[in-house]
Image (cartoon, rainbow, N blue to C red; front, side):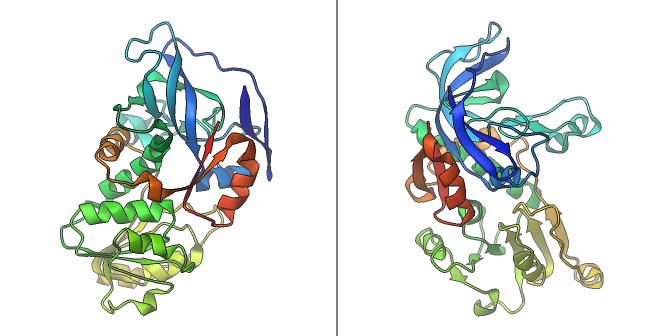
Length: 329
């Protein structure tokens, strides 16, 4: 079969690889679409994936075309979205309900072959059957949405909060859509790329700007979300949190990224700084939200490219062009 392969640091190609074979409790999915994510760029840079080469792609959906001998929950022809998370279920974190912090954490498309291919293998337990009205090519959005749902699980946000989001890429826009639905009084957005803010405006952001200095909230925001992973944005955002407010590190930063905090201010103003790591008991809920139309795929997916153009798609994504890019095998 044809698949994208990150062969070595900085090098991605499309080549022929062996067809996958399902284990007893696995299915083979013919991939309808696979989304690109910042994690894929980190893998290309030599981070996250334990070894290369690897077939990337952890945001994908498609049709079941093969089932293992012990699979009864799904049948050939079912349309599914795939949760890429793989846990050991044995370590301290799994046993205390923090599976996303598993000591042996793994993921389809990160530690094992992923969905940037014609076919992919997944445990049946990781597959969510899709209702008929969902276009399977759009369902690659469910995995990033499940990360955003996890982010709001961490926050336990209150009704009437004022929210500031850094970054109007896919994840920032998803956090915007969820903030609107969790009772935010206002949702403002900052991005140094003024062009990208037009989508946020289309989705009903309260205010947008290329700098938080341009926004009228001198007392700060109850909730500040970084969806960039960029040190300058994170540093600025930490200074914008209102008293008793929360800062969420949602964007994935490089390993070497460092910022400064003000311990006295954190103490004196009772500021919470927290993070949200990937998916935790949120994939099924994200699929249900997606089925209700919480996201408009035609707005969120800006580019649909053939799998043959995967290297070019990575380059385009790294340059910050568009919103969600998906490849179509």
